Image (cartoon, rainbow, N blue to C red; front, side, top):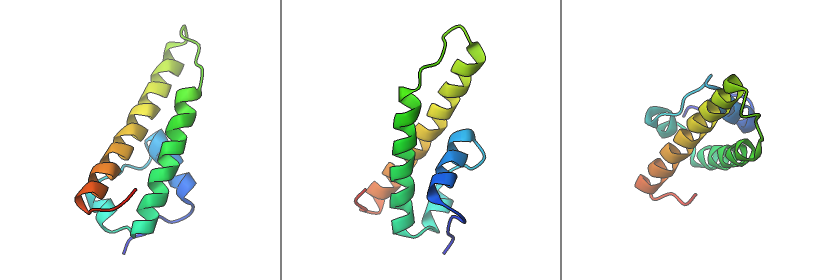
Length: 90
């Protein structure tokens, strides 16, 4: 089974910044406990991102926040769908 090397919080931040992508093949090789931990950490990061206040005149900062939110939300959605297919409680 493939495991995420290092901490789950570091992997969640890598997903948020675009260094790591979540896909079905990756999730199939992960243990269920690690998938649940990754899901919870991504949800926590998404809440932090949503609470950040960015100056609306700084276009690059707004773009970066929106990209990070998009990546994190896509990963959360994919894990939720994968868990529903595997009848896994998240």
